[in-house]
Amino acid sequence: MMHKVLLIRFSAIGDLLLTAPIIRELKKEGAHVTLLVKGRFRPAALLLNGVDEILSWERYKDALLEGASDEYHRIIDLQGTSQSKRFARKIKLPTATFNKPYLRRSLLLLTRSEKFALTPVVERYAEAAGVMLSKDKVSFNLTEPASILGKIVAVIGGSHAGKRLSAAQWLEILHPQPSQELVLLGGPGDRELAQEIKAELPQCADATHTSIEQGLAIIAEAKLVISGDTGFMHAAALMHVPLVSLWGATHPMLGFGPWPPQDNQREVITKGKTPLSKHGKVPNYASNPMRELDTEEVKKAIAEILQGRTTP
Image 1 (cartoon, rainbow, N blue to C red):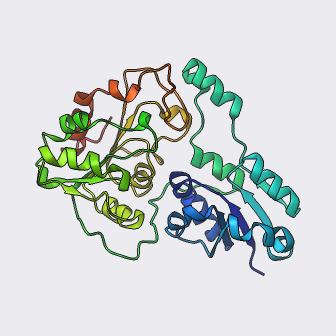
Image 2 (image 1 turned 45 degrees about the vertical axis):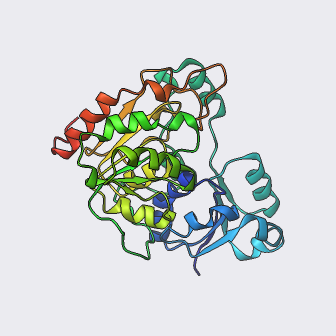
C-alpha cells in the first residue's frame, strides 16, 4: 500500500520552493504527497515536482480534521508554528515537526555572532522529514518555455526594504553590462523601479509583469542571476544557475543562504549591521543596511562568474 504523507507548509514563496528537495526524496521512497498551503501561495505550490495533491488551508482544514486520520499515514509539519502544531495534534497521526530555533535566532540577531549561525533550512527540513538529502539540481514543474533565454537576470524585488537595492545601486551594478543582455525580474510592485532603471538602460528587458512560473523559466535559462534574499534567488540556487546573492537586513547565517552551495555562486554582504531581522524589515531606529552594500564588490563578483573564475 502506498505511504500517504500530508506535508504542511503554509507559506511563503521562497519557503515553499525550498521544500522541493524534500519532496523529491519522499517521492524516491514511493510516498504519495499531499501539500497543505495557504490559498494565495497555490501558484508557487503548483511548481513543485512530485506533489500529488495540493489543498488550501482555508478550504480544507475542517475536512482534514475530520478525515485525515483515515486518509494519511503521517504528517510532516514543515511550517512549525503554533498554528500548524495545534492542527497536527488534533488529527492524531504520527507527526514529524520542523522545530524553529527561536532562541538561537534571537541570540544571532542580538549579537550578530557566527557562533549562533543556523544550519541551512533545507537541511533542517530534511532532518524533520527523516529523509537523506541529495544536492542534485532541482527541476520545477514548468509548463511553458522561457520567453527570454541566456540573459543576465537582475531580481530587483524583495518583500521588505532590507532586501531591496535602490535604482541608483542597480544602475551602478548593471552599467558595465550590455543593456540588451539584461532582464529585470520582480513582481507588479516593482514596475516603477524597473521603469526608472530602463530610463537609463533602455535596451534591458522588463519582466516584472511575468508570472512566478515564467520567472522561474527565465531564471532556469539565465546566464547569471543577481538577487537579494528572494524566492527567485532560492530557485536559482536550487537549479544550480550561476548566482550573485545580495544581503542587507538578512544574512546567510539565518539559514536562508543559497542552497546547495556551488562554485558558481558569490555572496555579497552589506558593510552595515547585519543580520538585522529575519524577514528583511528595517526597524525605525536603524538605517537600511542594504544601502551600505558595496556595489564594486558586486561588480567584481559578476565579472568573476562571467569570466568562468569559479574558485572562491
